[in-house]
Each structure stands twice: as structure tokens, then as C-alpha cells.
Image 1 (spheres, rainbow, N blue to C red):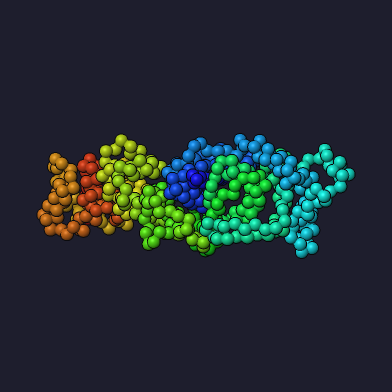
Image 2 (image 1 turned 45 degrees about the vertical axis):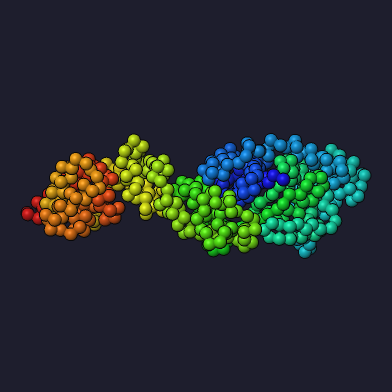
Length: 477
């Protein structure tokens, strides 16, 4: 048997981080078993489904590297197939027409609740419960189609949660075809999974209540029943269901915030699944080691700090070549277009170590690319003082004289000024840092000077010298 799994999102909004984990677990299970992974777009809700949401799903899957087999399957193109299955159930006496209006059904639900009864359909349109006269009266009326739930109970083995049982008297005769001709979720998903050869249905445990209904439909339609595995929910830090109040929940939001796909994949894989004490996994390792037996039964708690730790790890370990396109994209969003700037790789190296996201990396490197220095006034006042004029002038002369603007050459020139002026490193490095960056915080001073390049470094030092001369003249007067 070829294992075949699917990810079946509804395109009614962004691709939620919980949905991504479901997609990932389906992907890993299929690839681990040498099987196939299918993307199905459940776009039967015509009012809410949008092309924008479909594109967001596609973009998110591509960004994460979750490649699926074949073309995406759209439920909206399969309505005729669903209706054929509904008619087959009617013909076989396993479903029946229901003429109850939405208003009548709502009133009966309210009456049942007032009387302390469960608000289930009372089966008044079920054959045997409706007279020939009523059938004749209803002949021209619009109708829905309900599946006839048999007596008894259903037990199934969930590959994560174990054995689950439900009595059929807890399930009402469910609508499978609405009066407007559209089919409902439970019928659509059973027909799709059966006709598309899905062998394992791995989804969130909010679908557990649908599973017995779907098993009954599989049996009624004569299809083999697939394996089911229901993943525990993802909770926020307050143990409530993960939502926007806990931070970003859209995978594209994390992309835009400068997270790497490897970090998202690694983090979500470990959110409910484990493999010993190992924390860092490549995609190849996840495929090799993933099993449903190692998925926990308890809900996972989303921890933003752990995710950013992983992202920091992947940024530090990545090559500058791989990170450069992302860096340039995020930098351009801040203003500078540095695509043709040959300094970029060297600049990236100076900020890579501390950057927790690619946005942070771009922000930390922004000072290299601006035309003018934006000063922290307190730092400017404290460090760009008149007595620094001589060492600044000397440093500018030494750097101007360099034929090769290498790290070693810059360090030698800088140290020669320190020796002649009898200064400790910090006494000159910090004022130079302020002159070049506008702040007291930057990468190492030698690395900063080298990455900034000779031309821009000298321009900024000369601008600082003008400030120092003005300060010196003020002191003299």
C-alpha cells in the first residue's frame, strides 16, 4: 500500500500556524513512508473563499518547502461528483429528503433547549415518519438531503489518541446536501478522501466529532475506511487557543517578520512531536525520524521565545550567500536598495552573529547605507568632544594612506594612532563608533570600519572632524 496523505485548508483567510503544523505532519508522514502528499483546497464556501487566500496558501507552502504531489485539487470543481454520491445514498435508502425550513429547524432547537433536551433533528421527514399526503404536499418544495444514521455505535482506533467510541444516538441525521444544491463538509471530505486514495487522515483534534459521521458515510458508500490521527491543539502561553492576542498566527507574517522557513519547520515539528533530546533538525532528519507514535496526546504551548532562539540559530549557521537575498529585501523595505553594493557580504558578516531575525539584521546594518549619520544626541555630546580632534585627524590621515582597506590594515592604522596619542582602545573606539554609526552600539570597531569601506568611512570621519573643530572653537571662545 502506498501511503497517501493530504492537507486540506479552506481559503477563507491566512494560512494559520496550526494549519502549517498539520500540513507538515502530513508531509513528513508521507515522505517517511515513501508515499504521496496531496494539497486539496476546500473552497466550497463560495462567499468566504478568496483567490487571495488561495495564493497565500500556495506561497506559504512553497516558502516552507512543503512540496506536494500533482496539482492542487479544488473542491469547487467537484460539485457534480458530490451530488452523484448523495443521489446514490438516496437510491440505496441510506439518505432521505428533508423539507424542513431553516426557520422551523431553529424554532425546534429553541424549544428543545427550553425543555432540557438535546437540540437534535427529530427525523420527522424520515421515511416512515411522514405520510403520503405530506409527501405529495412537499413535492414542489425545496429540500435538503439527510444521511440516515443507523442504530448502534462506532469505535475507531486513532493513531495518536487510541480507541474512541461514540453511540449513534448522539449523532443526528446529518445534512449532506443543502436545499440550495450545495454539499456539506462531511460528504465532500469523505468523497474526496475516498476517490483520491487518501490512506491516512492526519488533522487537528477539533475534527474528532466529525470522524464517526465520516466513518458511517464511508461504510454507506462502500469505500474502505482510512486510518485517522488527530493532532492535539496548539495553545497560547495562557493555555487558551492560539490566536492573534498571542502574537502572529499567519505563516506569511512570520516570513515578513524575518523568520527563516527552516526555523518555522523545526519549531512546529517539535511542537507535539519529539525524538529523544534532539532539538535541531534538518528537513531530511525530520523525514527520516518522524513517526505518529512519537506525537504527544496533550496540547502543545506555543513559545515565541523558543521560536526566536531557533531562528537565531539558523541565521548564525546560514551562509551569507543564502541570506543575502532576504537581507536585501528587508533592507529595501527600510529604504536603501543595496542590490548593487559590493560591500553587502562584508556588512552582513558584522551583524549576522547577533541578529535574531532577518528584519533585525537589516535594522542593525541600516547605518552602513544611509547618506547621513543620524546621531543619538546624548552620545554625540558625550563622545564627540574637542580633545578628540587630534586623534580623529590622525586616524583619517592613516586610513587615507592605506592602499588596501583590509581588517588587518585598518587595525594596524588604528593602533598606531592609539600608541602615538597614548590612548586606550575605548577612548578612541567609542567616539569613532559614534561618528560612524550615530550610536554607542555597533559591531567591533575594526570590522565596522572595514565593512563600511574606505570612502564612506573617510566621509563620516571628516564630517565628525568638522563637528570637533566647531566644538574646539567654542571652547576657545
